[in-house]
Image 1: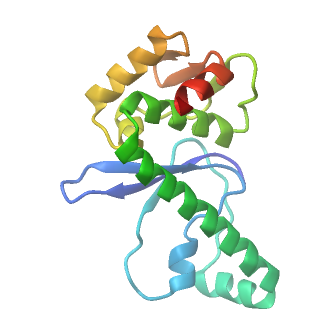
Image 2: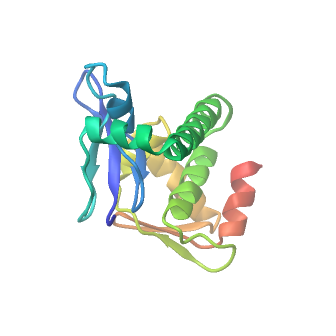
Length: 178
């Protein structure tokens, strides 16, 4: 109900990759609750700021879905949206260079925070490291640093310690789709 979480997956070598950022109103853990198959979770959530959440057991969640069929349709729509976003990201990995993937990620993060309009500077209110951002676009931290520098040189963003400001959302959006 308040705060933000990062959804992470740990690799075999212990590195953490951020798969998504979820904010107030988001649903997390629904796959494990619905599958109820005893398999390990596909990811873990970690608070990146103070969080207040409602917690349901898997049994309670499934009972709710049975009692409220419209909620099952809403859950399906949510999952379809996440699947489409995942498919889009996979396609981007093969077709876009890193600076364009970073531009799209920054727009997504600004939109998820509800702050991205079409005018004026927008500060992304999510504190993620360059390593975490790099993982979100399937690149190294060093390549992320170069991509952010390229976007700064174009006058599209400003960066600070765990802070990124989009200077012109429209120009960044135009760059992201060119």
